[in-house]
Amino acid sequence: MDAKESKKYSAYLLKIENLTKRYGKFTALDQVSMELEDKSTTLLLGPNGAGKTTLIRCVMGLVYFEGKIAVDGQDVIHNNKAAKSMVGYVPQESSFYDNMEVLDQSYLIAELKGRSREEVKERLGQVNLWDARNKRVGSLSSGMKQRLGIALALLGDPPLMIFDEPTSNIDLRGQLEFENLLTDLSSQGKTLLIATHLSGLDEHAQQAVVLDKGKLMARGQPGELLKRINAIDTIYVRVSEDSMATAKEIAEGYSNEVMTRGGWLLIPVQVSAKASLAKAILNGCNVLDILIQPATIESQYLKLIGGGN
Image 1 (cartoon, rainbow, N blue to C red):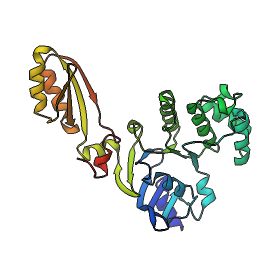
Image 2 (tube, rainbow, N blue to C red; image 1 turned 90 degrees about the vertical axis):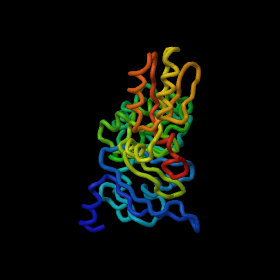
Image 3 (cartoon, rainbow, N blue to C red; image 1 turned 45 degrees about the horizontal axis):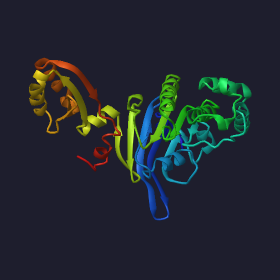
Image 4 (cartoon, rainbow, N blue to C red; image 1 turned 180 degrees about the vertical axis):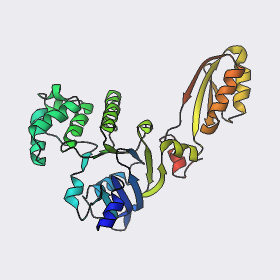
């Protein structure tokens, strides 16, 4: 990559152009292009088999591919060592020695990476695992093992962190801890790429990229993507008994799928009409309670890939 091309690529921390990966006659990725701005968070969404893990393997330079990938201007093929040094990778399941203590396991990985023991202590503290340093890895919860994987991926302070299906094997508490870690990493200026078949992380992201069968189906800010497909929010309203008929009449002016359940009205409504509907009900009825369940990229996935109404 010449100086002019390097400058063009370094405008983004990660830039992918026309990425294609074939395994024999099977095309795992087909002309995928995307960019990650520095210090941003991007969700890479799609079902199992969409091409997410293959894309990650390409970014890390682990497989041959067609197209161009650069990390902070460093070409993944031609400057592989420099590009890889800028990436911290947290797999879906990390491989650890269960009989080793957390600190010993961490020292081992640090030695392989050429990092100091002092940095190990810093990284374990960063993910709130220092107090567990003398525990055997096999005794850790799934969420704690994930945090250990994050700590070790942070060795060397890479600017780009990549997570592959980070919430698939952890419980609710672990998911909440992971979201808190995302917030911390983002505040520290990390660029985050999170590959998942679920979302639930929309509020953390500036960009969502949707893959299906190796093709790029949609890309943009999560809220803008939802507006583009006329996404559906659900409004839950509980009104006094004498207001129920009026509330239902108002709701049916906005939605053809109004339901009544346990004294509540459930009203699926387009995002663009949500505020108007809520205002009409609040002004015209005796409202006891009102809740809004926002649309998410996950809930609207079929629309984004063109497979649902």
